[in-house]
Length: 253
Image 1 (cartoon, rainbow, N blue to C red):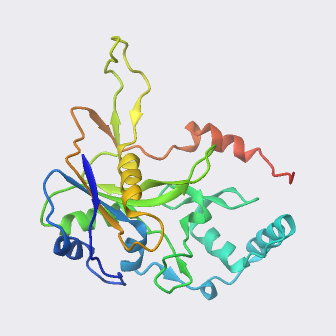
Image 2 (cartoon, one colour):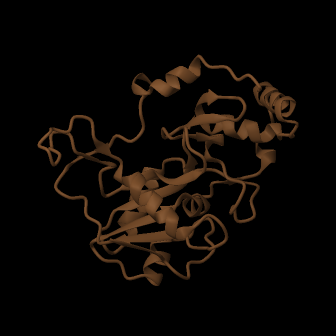
């Protein structure tokens, strides 16, 4: 397996054709997976915004005031309002905003970016990134899977890693349950999130700064002879960490 960044891509703007830009810069093969950073998907779909678009309501002002009291750093209540409006569930509201997006991803600040925004104040995540992945896939001349990626922090670990927020043309996970290990023991719980692993691979190549390489091709990787699963996001009933957070309150050390 190899992974390489697609070179020479433009600065994407609303209405641009991502598939055409990719194929103009790269000869795709049938054994490829195309990983596309959510930033360019958001830009071509017009998911930019200004803080002025989000007049702060009482909850947002309360969140901003509490954040400033706890940390000494000022938070614009309009940003808190943007996060609230892009979320379906506020998992934590202090000392940072951890939310669930409309498509099920749980992350800080609803995934709203304030860097690599193309000049806008805010860059929102795509509304339905799996549908975005499918549109790009259908526009490509070669039938390959497409994964829309983002970076996200993880519980219990420092730093961020690439994760998938949308995908098309392949299952989200490889289901190893029912197969056996080298000792002949049947695997009972192993479900491998391959779209996240592909996204993390892409992130290693594309980087986080000003490289300008938002599309990565993973070549010669195969799904293998496994059952597939579309499940990526845990529901509340099976997410015990999230259940615990509902009962948790923040106390400044």
